[in-house]
Amino acid sequence: MFTPFTLRGLTLENRIVVSPMDMYSAEDGTPNDFHLVHLGGRALGGAALVMTEMTCVSPEARISLGCTGMYRDEHVDAWRRITEMVHRWTPAKICLQLGHSGSRGSTKLMWEGNDVPLEEGGWECIGPSAFPFRDGMQVPRAMTRADLERVRGDFVRAARMALDAGFDMLELHCAHGYLLSSFITPLGNRRSDAYGGSLENRLRFPLEVFSAMRAVWPAERPMSVRISATDWVEGGIDGPQAVQIARAFHRAGADIIHVSAGQTSAMAKPVYGRMFQTPLSDRIRNEAGIPTIAVGNITEPDQVNGIIAAGRADLCALARPHLADPNWTLHAAAQLGYTRQPWPVQYLTGKEQLERNLRRQRELDLLGTSTI
Ligand SMILES: Cc1cc2nc3c(=O)[nH]c(=O)nc-3n(C[C@H](O)[C@H](O)[C@H](O)COP(=O)(O)O)c2cc1C
Image 1 (cartoon, rainbow, N blue to C red):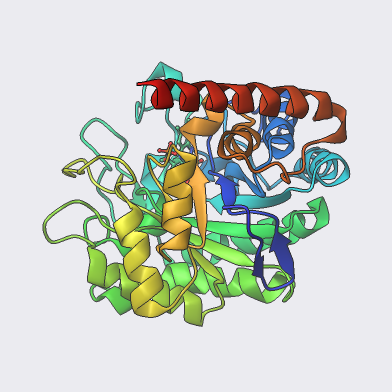
Image 2: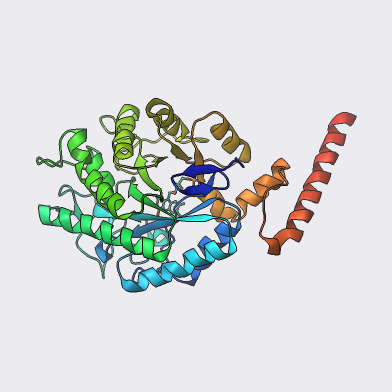
């Protein structure tokens, strides 16, 4: 867990990633003090890579009115303030996740109801085909060729702006039933043109978007693609197809595949459990030989060490554990007795005290065991 990992010109100090998490707290797409403290705090907390929430490439690409964006000039300055804080005060790197909500757009903030359409102030959604993500949601307009070109252009503009804003890495969001994901899964895509039908056709638009972004993103900076490696639905994407999807993005220049799952269909029957998506990462990494990020219910330092040591993934992304504890990596190091973990110099007295208390606790535990 505390070994470095290099992708192109980017070296990460350890294997922990702060998984992308929408905070639904932006206005007009502009990240604010909340995002600065939230992302900056987690960068101080020891994770080697901090990912932003899904940042939307146009106003209509947002899930909700609170989503961050990368489409107005102000967004570049607001994001630069955050990347500069991370780079100046922490050893962490920062990755921008770019996405488009597709048929899951124009909905309320997470805490007002998941996938609940906005009653006012909403917008027309677009998707590969004209049917809703779930009953009660908007029926999206099926994208025309002009829409495909415009959206691809929006992603390219956002990638250029990301460079200007100082991001170290980009991730293209092709998971969870949002626009690009809904092209890939047969459950979202019923097109009869070159962008629907076979997996090769369904991948065409997401690959066009990825390649166009790769072309403007510097060669020394890595790119990741987040996929849903199973739909958890009979007849949907499954393990073997996920390997094909990973191979296609890797050929197009993706350096690492972020292996998520599901959220692509209301009919899904996910099987949850500890590290439940890790077998999907394992399969892609070991069948296709492509670096992966495992994510999903990874909560313990021992689980991370097990996943990395067994070669089931190259990096582990943790989302909810980082909401509960921004310093998850610093605490994990102390818990494991790994005293070489760098802490922010401002916090060093906290490191010494925590390590001393944990050492005493271990000694007491040992004493307890030996006297039994
Ligand atoms: C509040 C919240 C917001 C999320 N927003 C995003 C997002 O913007 N983009 C994304 O790819 N995944 C998002 N996710 C999914 C997480 O990145 C992660 O895949 C999922 O929570 C499983 O990991 P965990 O068990 O460590 O929480 C979100 C999860 C949470 C809890």
